[in-house]
Length: 191
Image 1 (cartoon, rainbow, N blue to C red):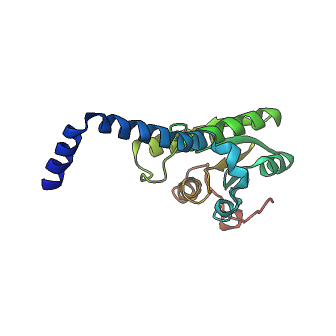
Image 2 (tube, rainbow, N blue to C red; image 1 turned 60 degrees about the vertical axis):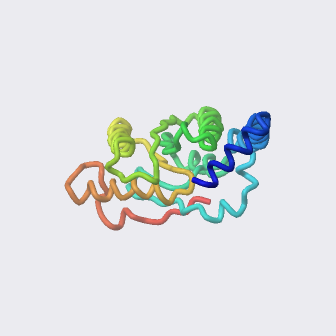
Image 3 (tube, one colour; image 1 turned 90 degrees about the vertical axis):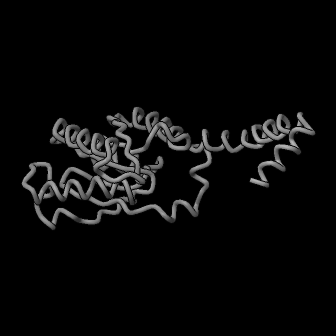
């Protein structure tokens, strides 16, 4: 309380200080906002971040999960027959929004159908957002039974792992979308 009172008394003596502090904060945050809103431009050069990405792996005969596909991975997936991509990136996150835009442009060039089904890795799978996404993913897979599908988040370790777990769990409970056997859980590194 004493600190608060002292701060208020200092600001009262210098009324323009608060305005200057706020203005300085806005100016200082502008480059950060610019960098995050154009994350797709900087992302290819963030090598340490790429080392944290998970592996591309096949969880069903027609479903592959993994990290955000750069140009070479998406092109490779297309050559291997992938015609549908389900992105778990969230457009409400400023740094993921630019990645979604870049992926949409590349997907349309490669004649890949793109679905954006946002999930949040900090929420449990039964949260409203994630449960809705998982339901929508099942629906997309039902609508594309003969298409090869790539499902990804950014790192390919959290949200994509939740989806892979859901697909494996649905097999155990008898759902027709699930993995048929443990042999279907092969690691297929496509790089």
